[in-house]
Image (tube, rainbow, N blue to C red; front, side):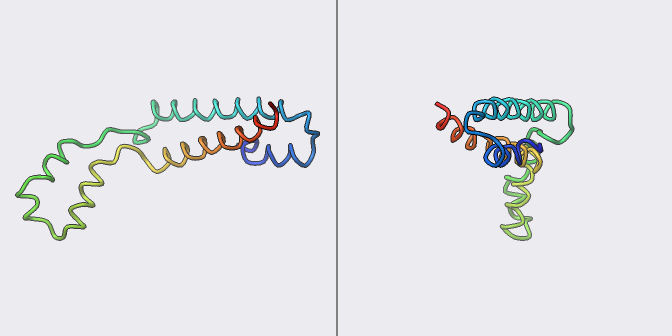
Amino acid sequence: TVFALYGDDVRILAFEPSADGVFLVLSAIAFFLFLTEIALLSWCKANYIYTPDFAEIKDLVTIIRWKMRESTFSWLGEIWKAMQCTSFYFWLDLISTLSMVIEARFQAMHFF
């Protein structure tokens, strides 16, 4: 994590441009380690990734539940909650991991 946050800044401040290839390889290794972490958390941690509650969705979209709703927004909120299939932390991990691709692409452009 420390390398992912500060590695590019350290590369620019403390190393010659000839070291860019090494940092590109280290960034690729960190990227694949983060992807592995997401995969392992998806497999091992409860409620990191889960399937939507299709029975609840089916119950929510009936005419009876529509007539019993307090407001349309609360009803839509219930549907949204039943449709969720990932946690906040999954999206946080995924977006932060994918942001490394942008940095690596710029490094690769200068290296090749």
